[in-house]
Image 1 (cartoon, one colour):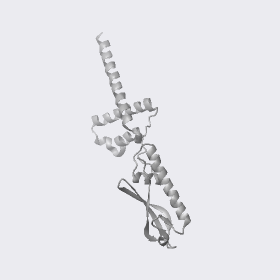
Image 2 (spheres, rainbow, N blue to C red):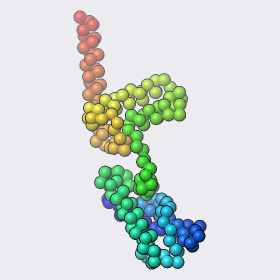
Image 3 (cartoon, rainbow, N blue to C red):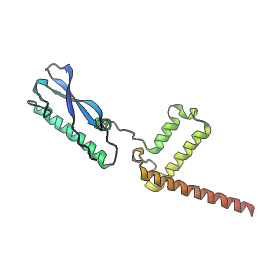
Image 4 (cartoon, rainbow, N blue to C red):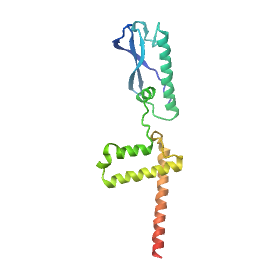
Length: 186
């Protein structure tokens, strides 16, 4: 369901030299909230809570309108890309933070080699991850024509297609082994 973003604004306690306070923005989606500083200053005495705007400062009002438009655009993009919509994700994307911008291969490399984790894993266990990473690269190359498949795009279809791919690989390996055994016997 498409989410309509309705931010709530509140003032900081600190006052600048002009007597203005910085506005903070709070977004709430599915009972989870996240907030950030807008960088917009306004006079608390001129604030109309009902309209969420300043009664006198038109520049601040324009900036707030632009901010709301941008937040709604981010939410709409997430919706149309069939991504999860959370308040924290919207704010992080607004601020320019890119969440989990890993390809599947990069994630496996981070998991296996990041912070020395491969030393902690048993030899057989880590080799299974390395093999799985190889098969994922082969799969994404064959099905999606890339080895840098974005981990955020993994969905049920991806998993189902990967399952079919693995079954086909196992079938090829079994046939190869049977043929090798057959030729060695004769």
